Image: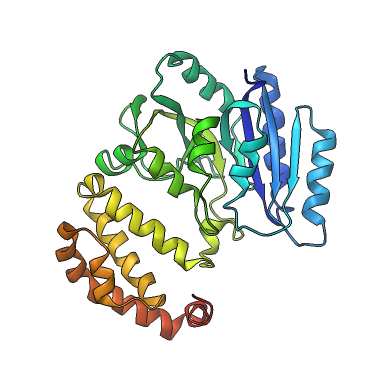
Length: 313
């Protein structure tokens, strides 16, 4: 029996500039009479204890239950969700980053749809939409207000792009985040979950997302674990081709990225081609010249990639 409806996990890394507003958005949820806890996982911020001090300060003034874990090694975010889920007491997990905010009725949107579909065992959560700091929808609007589907179908069949935000049953998070390696992103889990489970998708807004925060993983464009990036691209191309073939733009884009980053990791053109599906290889051969061109542009113009050659395994 779960103690809370939601366990909200926030991975933290040098989050002193934004974590307070995340906290403030959770304070607003207390007016909705929905049970939740906040779990903060500090991913070894290494900033003279500034983030740790802020975490402790926020937990002291919170009007809702909190838990904290302070990791002794930086896992680049990959371990935080699994660590938090292991101590969570909620039926559903929400991963709320340190620069994210729930909108005022965010948890209520989730709860209403959970209650509506609680008897469908194949539905493991609810997925809503996100707005930016100017209240603009991030991505394309869905042509339906509500639909049972999975992320692969939503993105590649219906071609709905942009930020989405979900709550997911705790046992599913524990299973699909258990084998994360450093550098794996949450998207790796979502696309594997999509192979087996469904969500209720809604056009209703649940999260406010800071699209211009230079410290966010999305905006930093940092490539610290290139092997993880290559693994995720290969998984998507090989295992999700039944969906990607309906979305040519994303298929071409992923093949180009796979070739580009593989070359940075010292993989030959022949090896790149051989690791993909037979039915994809004609596309790979056609796209490889563009991947090679981008690879050489990286080396000539981007110091980040020149340095990368010195650290890859």
